[in-house]
Image (tube, rainbow, N blue to C red; front, side, top):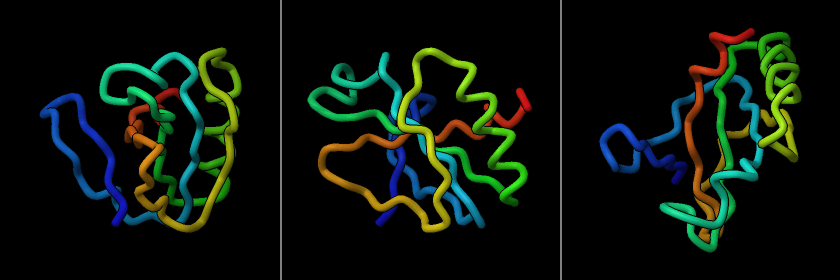
Length: 93
Protein backbone atom coordinates (compact mmCIF):
# COMPACT_ATOMS: atom_id res chain seq x y z
CA UNK A 1 0.00 0.00 0.00
CA UNK A 2 1.31 3.43 -0.97
CA UNK A 3 -0.98 6.26 0.06
CA UNK A 4 -0.66 10.03 0.23
CA UNK A 5 -2.96 12.50 1.95
CA UNK A 6 -4.61 15.23 -0.12
CA UNK A 7 -5.55 18.50 1.55
CA UNK A 8 -7.87 19.24 -1.39
CA UNK A 9 -10.42 16.59 -0.41
CA UNK A 10 -9.06 15.52 3.03
CA UNK A 11 -8.63 11.92 1.88
CA UNK A 12 -5.92 9.39 1.20
CA UNK A 13 -5.13 8.37 -2.39
CA UNK A 14 -2.78 5.89 -4.04
CA UNK A 15 0.63 7.31 -4.99
CA UNK A 16 0.73 7.17 -8.81
CA UNK A 17 3.09 4.81 -10.62
CA UNK A 18 6.27 6.41 -11.92
CA UNK A 19 9.82 5.51 -12.96
CA UNK A 20 11.36 7.64 -10.19
CA UNK A 21 10.24 9.51 -7.09
CA UNK A 22 11.89 12.46 -5.41
CA UNK A 23 11.28 12.44 -1.67
CA UNK A 24 12.01 15.15 0.87
CA UNK A 25 11.08 15.66 4.48
CA UNK A 26 9.14 18.86 5.13
CA UNK A 27 10.55 20.47 8.29
CA UNK A 28 7.65 22.93 8.56
CA UNK A 29 4.69 20.55 8.08
CA UNK A 30 6.06 17.65 10.14
CA UNK A 31 4.81 17.11 13.67
CA UNK A 32 1.42 18.86 13.57
CA UNK A 33 -1.98 18.81 11.84
CA UNK A 34 -2.45 15.60 9.82
CA UNK A 35 1.24 14.86 10.44
CA UNK A 36 1.01 15.12 14.25
CA UNK A 37 3.79 12.93 15.73
CA UNK A 38 4.84 12.04 12.16
CA UNK A 39 7.27 13.10 9.46
CA UNK A 40 5.62 14.77 6.48
CA UNK A 41 7.45 13.45 3.42
CA UNK A 42 6.83 15.15 0.08
CA UNK A 43 6.61 12.88 -2.97
CA UNK A 44 7.23 14.08 -6.54
CA UNK A 45 6.73 11.39 -9.21
CA UNK A 46 9.18 11.83 -12.13
CA UNK A 47 9.29 10.26 -15.60
CA UNK A 48 13.08 10.29 -15.90
CA UNK A 49 16.24 10.51 -13.83
CA UNK A 50 17.00 13.86 -15.50
CA UNK A 51 13.63 15.27 -14.44
CA UNK A 52 14.20 13.98 -10.91
CA UNK A 53 17.55 15.80 -10.75
CA UNK A 54 15.89 19.05 -11.84
CA UNK A 55 13.27 18.60 -9.11
CA UNK A 56 16.08 18.03 -6.59
CA UNK A 57 17.72 21.29 -7.65
CA UNK A 58 14.44 23.10 -7.00
CA UNK A 59 13.85 21.41 -3.64
CA UNK A 60 17.42 22.14 -2.51
CA UNK A 61 16.71 25.84 -3.06
CA UNK A 62 14.04 25.65 -0.34
CA UNK A 63 14.94 25.98 3.34
CA UNK A 64 11.94 23.94 4.57
CA UNK A 65 13.05 20.61 3.04
CA UNK A 66 15.71 18.12 4.10
CA UNK A 67 16.72 14.50 3.36
CA UNK A 68 16.15 15.04 -0.36
CA UNK A 69 16.58 11.84 -2.36
CA UNK A 70 15.66 9.96 -5.54
CA UNK A 71 14.17 6.47 -5.29
CA UNK A 72 13.02 4.06 -7.99
CA UNK A 73 10.53 2.14 -5.84
CA UNK A 74 7.16 3.60 -4.94
CA UNK A 75 7.24 4.75 -1.30
CA UNK A 76 5.36 2.39 0.99
CA UNK A 77 2.96 3.64 3.62
CA UNK A 78 4.54 3.68 7.08
CA UNK A 79 3.03 4.38 10.47
CA UNK A 80 5.27 7.36 11.27
CA UNK A 81 5.25 9.05 7.83
CA UNK A 82 2.56 11.12 6.15
CA UNK A 83 3.15 11.40 2.41
CA UNK A 84 2.10 14.52 0.50
CA UNK A 85 2.05 14.46 -3.31
CA UNK A 86 3.64 17.60 -4.71
CA UNK A 87 3.87 17.01 -8.43
CA UNK A 88 3.12 20.73 -8.88
CA UNK A 89 6.77 21.35 -7.90
CA UNK A 90 7.68 20.18 -11.42
CA UNK A 91 6.20 23.44 -12.69
CA UNK A 92 9.16 25.22 -11.05
CA UNK A 93 11.91 23.39 -12.94
